[in-house]
Amino acid sequence: SPECWQNMVLLMDKPKGWTSFDVVGKTRSMTRKFGVKKVGHCGTLDPDATGLLILCIGKATKLVDNFVGMDKVYTGVMRLGEATPSQDAATPVETFSQWEHVTDAQLADAARSFVGEITQIPPMYSAIKVGGERLYKAARRGEVVERKERKVVVSSFTVERDLGDAQFVKFKVECSKGTYIRTLAHDLGAALGSAAHLTALRRESIGEHLVGDAWTTGALFEACGPQLLEFQRVTKEELAAKELATAEAEAIETESDEKNHDEKTLSDDDTSSSDSESESEFVQLPGYETGVRTVTPAPDQSGKEVKKGSAVTVHALGVVVETGEKFWSTKDPGQQPFAYNAGIGQVITGWDQAVMGMRVGEVREARIP
Image (cartoon, rainbow, N blue to C red; front, side):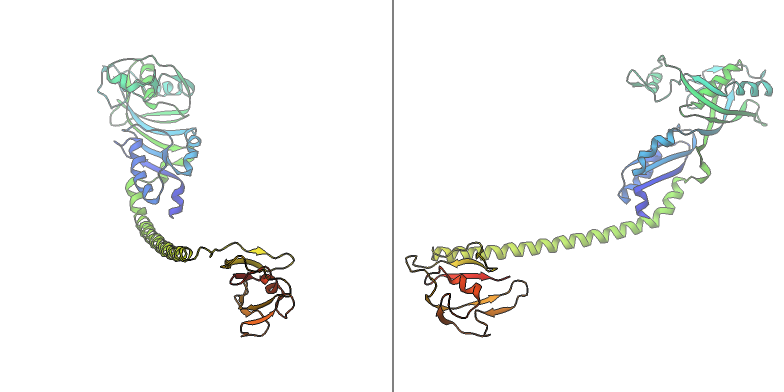
């Protein structure tokens, strides 16, 4: 599923001629379409080598170091009697040596001597940095840079003469991380009193992960093609729905802004026509649930305030906030404006208190929870 690409470990079978980063780039071109950018590999293979390359995708990139540290198994072929600057077939042969004297028994004994902890000097044609520069850059200029020895472990190293051409030797190596197989071939040739260079290499496994379980890039893209198309279809529909929802929200917001602007304009017009009209916050009446606010002040502030016993005429219709139910100021539905004495008449107590302090012409709004 598309979610799997967010946290995935992928076994790939790298083809000859591709760099490890070529495989990463090709795979990333697909994962990006699933919304995943992070892709890393767990141990470089030279361009001419083939075999298992483990890719960590998405959140799984945190696991790269775990795989890098695992032992690896390689199979390959070396050619006796010839040495190259790169210790493999990537550069022309520069040294020829006698190899016919090497017996099968000598070959097997020499291979066994490399089993265990050994030291290697990394080849000049490698990506190791010395003095801030990759060694292969200096090698291409014909320079030789001093390199430090490195300890590695070879768990097994078996060899077998090619039946068709005795100059070629097939081998299988199980080793720790950091082991240069082409250096192992080079050093084996030197140990035999001859020379040797790597002509073919394949990584068979990393830890318990086998190349037989790996994907080729072609098979991976073919298998994931329908899933990718479906993901893109769903994503396109979700994006379209999101854009529609955004457009609708913006339209509602615009309509609301225009309405508020019109109301504000109207309010401004009303205010300009009557400086006495204003609106305040609700104020809770002490001892009551009723809240009161002035909507329109009295035109003449010199008028007398309503006090208990004052004769008043009430024009009042209320709304219960929680239910939306409308009701008149008296318990008689449909009650018309009426006169009574404030603080004495038979009206809702909260409404009665809201009248206190009013002046002639003043409009108040009372709210009962």
